Amino acid sequence: AQTVTQSQPEMSVQEAETVTLSCTYDTSENNYYLFWYKQPPSRQMILVIRQEAYKQQNATENRFSVNFQKAAKSFSLKISDSQLGDTAMYFCAFMKQPPYSGGGADGLTFGKGTHLIIQP
Amino acid sequence: NAGVTQTPKFQVLKTGQSMTLQCAQDMNHEYMSWYRQDPGMGLRLIHYSVGAGITDQGEVPNGYNVSRSTTEDFPLRLLSAAPSQTSVYFCASSYSGQPNSPLHFGNGTRLTVT
Image (tube, rainbow over all chains, first blue to last red; front, side, top):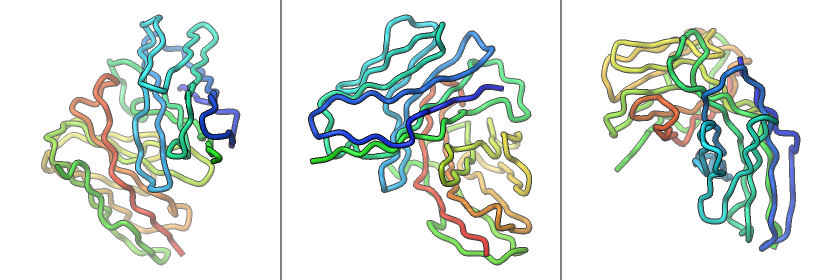
């Protein structure tokens, strides 16, 4: 089984600053994907960014980028030029590549989340 | 395009009551799943389905039943609600269930069991 750990329960930064959210994971799998999801107060789960473990290049999506360190099992999210609308819970998640064995081994494994507050 | 629709948005039950949380998607996705989110926790997988007629257990299946008679619908049944089932429930679907197929989430159902 895999575990995902987010060590920062809450972070607060000023608007326009850059912020980095930490995530570490533990797995014996070699092929997997990692994700960052955003959950604003509306409760909707929104995919922010995705990283395939076999890719060495770090994924980027506009102001969002990751620092993926496979050997260290670390997957941090950097938000540049933070905006008030970035205020939300952020969840790091893990999913292994097929084939799947069933019986609870599949699907996304989430961390406990980091509450990010962007101050005006 | 409605996406993933969950009903109801809120529900209060008494211990021992039964109910069904509804989930429907209009994207012709083969894969559907149910997660629960408890305070201070990430989402945890309850049950999932890779197609009509096929279901399997996730990480926390006890106390819940599912069935998948159509591609569009994936209801979650609580046969005898317990206070430990107080949570926010999310339904999610994707084209294939594989990691390169993005999951689409519903807006959640907040369930309180007293």
